[in-house]
Image 1 (spheres, rainbow over the protein chains, first blue to last red):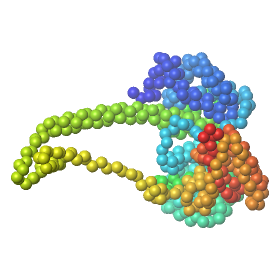
Image 2 (image 1 turned 180 degrees about the horizontal axis):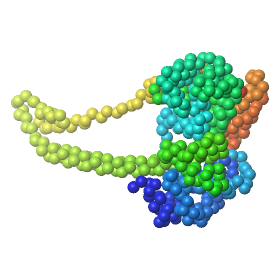
Image 3 (image 1 turned 180 degrees about the vertical axis):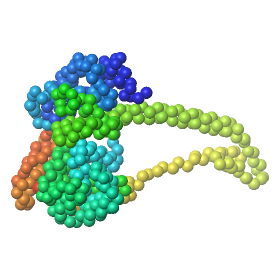
Image 4 (image 1 turned 90 degrees about the horizontal axis):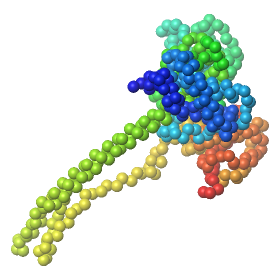
Length: 247
Length: 253
């Protein structure tokens, strides 16, 4: 039987049993707050108990408010995260965030390069998705700045109605950016955005826009607490590696 | 978007996370637009997506272990059965072997089958030797494997490792130093005249542990670290100056 359906049934018939199923998830979220420096090591258990208590108290509200637009597990995890943040917003940082250099020991060891790159690229794709329209432009600019080949599928991310010839022309123009100076690349990209949007964006503005969004992307990639140390160069290498793997 | 203590309500957030993980429908435009413009929401939702990824990975891993264990038991049972049958056949066959009498005056033609050879000695006794089946031992050519190992310069720069690629940044023969927990890592950078230098200590999984601004040297106490292999790098805003690595041992090793 579908796991989600089983859990929804438990929510209605035996919520305490459902809560037992979610104990690992509760602990994972509590531990995340500890690593962010919001909870002391000794207080993790207290927070963990507090969350269980609050979940039990709020169970009837959860039963009423849950809509089936998402998986129950996901919905529950968001509630748990919110409960953590409710309590922790009242206090400031209690200790320095601890990097968790050794990660989750339960993760299966797999061939390092392929798995590592896939995992990192998955994270990057999500961050781009979250940026919505800005993400599409950012992705394209990242490829251009790192002299990576532009594909038709990269352009189809834009919501513009591009006709066949226009797509080819843009693709050729962008691929001709290789080995140009950064300023020239921004100029060409600006011209292409003008073709698509009708808006004139000076290269300098585009450069500032790119820097702002790239910084945000790097902050999200590196995480809190920091799980790695990406910079613009290593992010470009990640994209390059992904292209090679896909080939 | 509903009464909330967060920017978007729990149902919308959960729907967004499912969509991000490729498991649900696209949320409403207003939700997407809000997340696109809100760093805090991005951080929280990304964090949640990864916690759920990890949970699924652990559950799948445990399920696969159970399946594998069942398969292992079944395979063991089959092998045992085959072994018993083989032993039984062998036992029966050995009972059925006939003695061959050889006349002193006739030429000895030893009876041969693929499993045994019969010799006749001077006293006309029969000795039989059963030849053991040939056992083949496979020794992996680890040296050949190591020589054929394909270096990955991009990944090495990505995780700032120090392997054997042609990348000039990573193929320096920095000898690997060794320290005990509690020792002090002392490095002299006075040869680099750059003004602003940053020293980074990185674990063997590519995760940054310490980032410090340095001038001419660094004295870093190696405490609050677990034993293992560590990398370090000295960088400016534009370039990597030098890389190194060391093994850290506990005092009981």
